[in-house]
Length: 275
Image 1 (cartoon, rainbow, N blue to C red):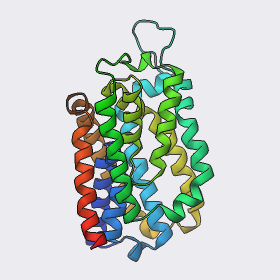
Image 2 (tube, one colour):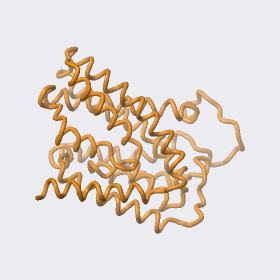
Image 3 (cartoon, rainbow, N blue to C red):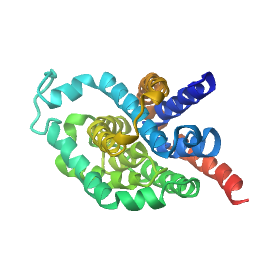
């Protein structure tokens, strides 16, 4: 791998890390940056390029584990969180219930999504649709949320957020945009919805990543190791920065600025693609 190819890995890791957990869609941004500019498939090949996108996603997941390690470890009994005992204390069942709809529908529609929804045009539509949902959440969500911490989330709310998360199977829609919006619409404040989104993303993304890696294992090659390592480290570092910044920002600005960004990006892409 020469310097410029490793620079491309660094850039793609940056894009993944900065956008994976912001409600703007990392998949959409990777499709835009890679398909329209960097074109990693031209020098990696189709399957190694797809595997690379999974590898850098694992870098982003590791960043979530670093930020939320206490909560994540507590879910499997490896850490005890001090505080007031609650009958509905946040536990592993909340995560499982929240994951279930997307896992079931994702497996059912995986081939259709892979064959029909990965492209710049479909990303444009998803950016707009996701922005509309985010605006609706800010405008229609309760003015005084009644769920202000993870430990106040009940199983019904976890399931509803999981249903809304299914929209993120459409590349460009955004997992965090969908789940935060769903949480806000059903009584969570923005920070609680974001915390639940990030924690729930860990097992979902690890599972999806492992499935993809195993599927493409025969196409893995040591020739691409340096490319993968640079992308992985880049995604981890920038995701760590992005998550910490986003969690401080979301309670103040809510979802509207991100929705506006999505609409502007969609308009620019529409001009490029459709004219």
